[in-house]
Image 1: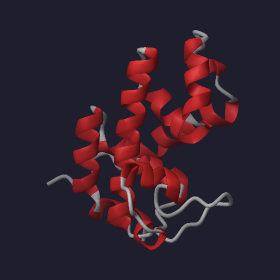
Image 2: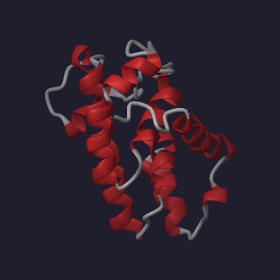
Image 3: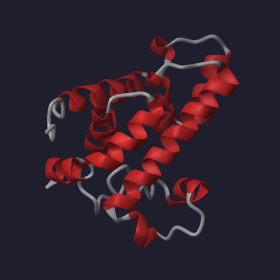
Image 4: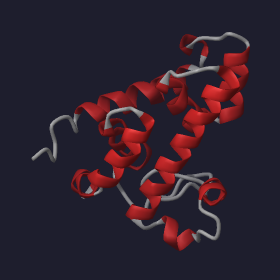
Length: 151
């Protein structure tokens, strides 16, 4: 179900990828890392759905969003895209950072942690190994979607 569902959501992923100026496969890869493409996935700390978002994080972008709505694949990927766009905007403005690797790192490790690192002139290699591994996994899973769903 995972890969097929993600391919069905490709138009939404492409839309946000265009805003982020990245390939849509990175958003697809991130979903695979987060939930293996399972829209009913529940994280150990309360993360929800395909992109494993906290309800409060999603509600910062979509006020009045309910937990049940966040389990809907279309809603979850819209919330994912909106959050990624916000992270990218924030890092560009606070830290003059255009490196999408740090956007992914912030999604996984927290915006505050990544902001402190960048303000201290840290590099990607200064991130914890598990965060570097998360970003690497997103790119590896993204490769599986190259050329998929193209017409």
